[in-house]
Length: 220
Image (cartoon, rainbow, N blue to C red; front, side, top):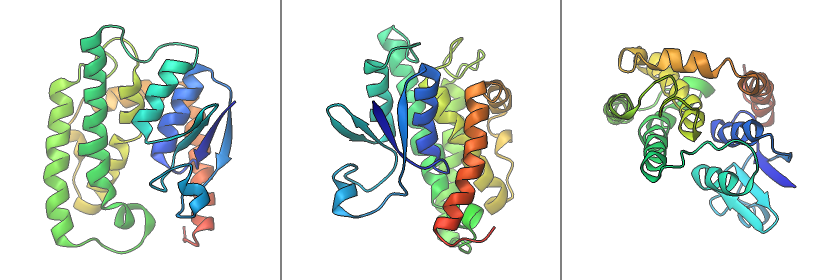
């Protein structure tokens, strides 16, 4: 059986969890909060979550794990069969990862964890990337009704757990309504949040965030 290593407060963990649940896969949830021990680094070479234990060994990096799930787990496909359309989904995944979630992550401490304000230098470097990221998603996304077209794909799973984090950072750190840059996001998020799988993940995330804060001695 597959084993998913991570914790529900991690948005990357939730991307993989959503893929497994939408596939109807059987898997074991193994609670790990990342780390630098040799034991964990043998499972996730960068010490990050999520990691996936497979019958052949461990995998890390979310997009790699999603590809593995698509190739090995029965259930509906979340990549198009057409090579070009499949590549477009991967392109949209990269936009969400590199130009929404990753730059916003530099401000997570101030926005979500109460660790104090980030420097003006960081803010000045983050905001332009978020603007360009939203513009790229808007140019290449179809929103008809899903991000890549009529069917849900892995691009939606990554966007669902990337864009709201970026929007939260924009609102809290910059007093900036990111929906003005990407107004199509609202209908897409509403559609995705109707899924029973997503509703379960949202509930698990709320409890997972509480556990995460307790584990690291955070208030709130």
